[in-house]
Length: 379
Image (cartoon, rainbow, N blue to C red; front, side, top):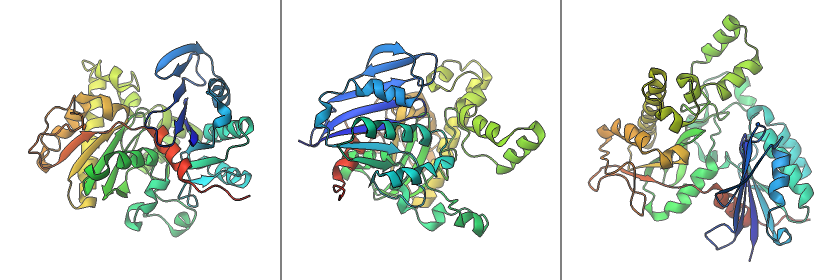
């Protein structure tokens, strides 16, 4: 039976899942959280195994790889790569030339690509026999029409590849695969977690999405700003004397929930501080901007049949789902129980004009499926 290792790199985390084709559950799920921080945690199948310092993603990969069962049985290895740029619009086998081209894309995703490429190199060195595949988060959105991906900027900028690419594509693909015939023709997927995005799905195909050239655009996120006036960046640089690197760091690591609440980037923690007006405003902004975006994507779809919640916040924060859905009542969305869906994840009332449901994403499964479905490289 084909055995695949799925590698999923986050900005401060690393997940390894071992999957066998045709088997729903992973054989083992390994994770390191808190990479580069004073306290890191190694987790196996949802249980914390140890605490230690993981200096970087390569060190975390070494620690997790040592716990893999029967590593010689790995037939393929799939790596989540956040950005594929203008060239990579589908899963591809990783070669030295591909790695060099991905290095050139680092400025488009400076938080995610460097650690992902470091893990690819560590993985290829440790497991040289099985082929390694790059599974791109941007690939799912290669179907965007020109009106959705084009920015109103000078032609020379567009020629340089500045356009909307979209992200969270692996999660989107997993949602579409899970729902199958239960996916309705006009659906909006709200993927809410540390990173947040909304995608308009017409018959399961992405026709618009909120993240753009980078994962900074769109919805308010845990520590990322989402949409803002580009003139604000120029003003901040001039008035506050900020460098490009300082602006980039602030937008990625000190904005969003953290920037507005001034207490935490974690939604659960912010919700627990609702007596603080800053935390209350952060939650209000988060929900308002999500609901407003659903309205905008409803225009792109010409109507709305289904609203799907996924991601850590989308799957677990009933209070956030309720506040977002309350602002969408004008679409005919009626809530049954935002805290808890049935076996099918449906949280809207039976007579609701728009169905709302929760889908629990498994990116490891989607990465493994992509790597398993790729034709073997020719030598």
